[in-house]
Image 1 (spheres, one colour):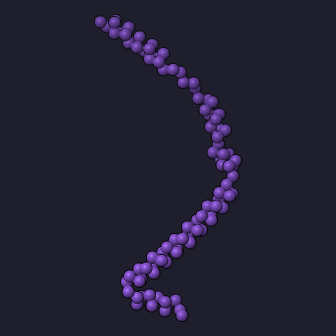
Image 2: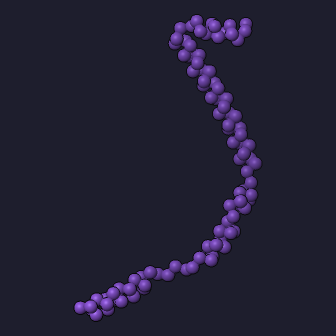
Image 3: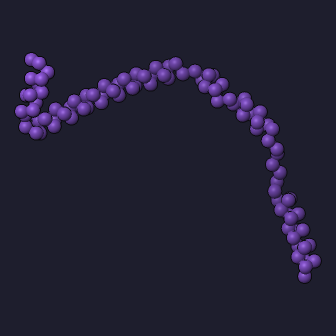
Amino acid sequence: MKFSDYLKKIQNLPLTKRKIIFWILIIVLGLIIIAFWVMGLKQTIKNFSGEKALNEMNFPNLKEELDILPDLKDPTEEIKKDLDSIKKLQEKTE
């Protein structure tokens, strides 16, 4: 029997049976696609090289750049000095 004959038989079926056939086909195709995706994911994980990924991220360069950054001081000392200077200015203006 040809494929077109199968299609004609399906077209002559009631709507509910056609919907059931349609959804079964969609589910089967979806499962096949998911199976191929999982197999590809397994292959990708198997071929994954952690050292290569770390080298591509340039972590050594990042460490060098972090060493260049200035040290951050405790801001409370500077704030106290600023408050003292503001108080002195306030006293002068009064």
